[in-house]
Length: 119
Image 1 (cartoon, one colour):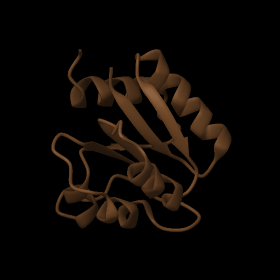
Image 2 (spheres, helix red, strand yellow; image 1 turned 135 degrees about the horizontal axis):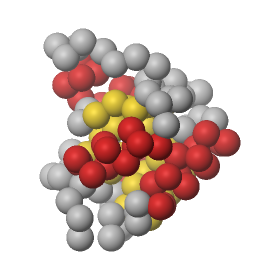
Image 3 (tube, helix red, strand yellow; image 1 turned 90 degrees about the vertical axis):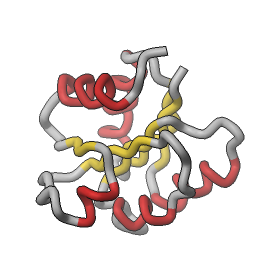
């Protein structure tokens, strides 16, 4: 079963994302800051297959969090952002997909199905 680290500063929105991910059969761990997310990697033996991170965290930008992640084979990353950056941007080179808030659960479903193989 795939594990997801979800980092979203808005607790209510984080719960909505978590419910959508859990409906897809994923195990979700929620953090509300980049520091909490990085601590999760330091303190767990069960690493996630996917990180979903808000680009506007209270303690750092999502792309800064991504730069600090340990390099792991197969780790997929989705950035929550209000706009999809140009394909040639640094943000686009760091992630596997973008989640635009208010685009609904269908966008999450489609991203997950494209990024994570079924087990």
